[in-house]
Length: 206
Image 1: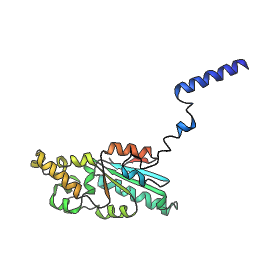
Image 2: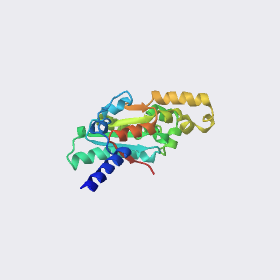
Image 3: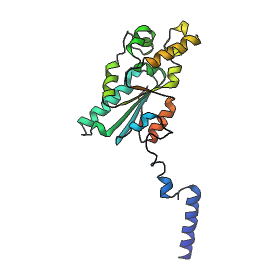
């Protein structure tokens, strides 16, 4: 019995050294930080559903992240009887994929946008889907870093080396995003925030 008590004492000491014996109050401190704290971006406060998921892409991939968000909500409702109010769905786009958040004015004025997105034309073919997702409460996030670099991806080749043209284009992009799209500072941080808040991560790329 004395040997058993000694063993348990050593085990408790080892657990404490490894941080395994943290108090319940310490373990729950992260959970007590409700969405919308100073360290979070504003969109985090909208994560109120029990089923949480973030669809992410940095490539156009025919708008797969947007379409999967739609499929997720449709399937949860029709197959599993889960109300959309119980779902918090995030679509985070960066890199070239942010073109799906551009309004038609940008697509019309800069035909290179459609070329980059592998969807040539003067209008955004995902515009109606984006509007539908917005109405259904999907959180649509565009990377601010990618917007700043958007001129290097979407401007015609001769203008991509022009710093003034790139800056002007980035400003046009910010002003010309589709309704309901929010800009976050950095998508890599946004993905961390989403997963810290219980969102399952799904990469919608190739």
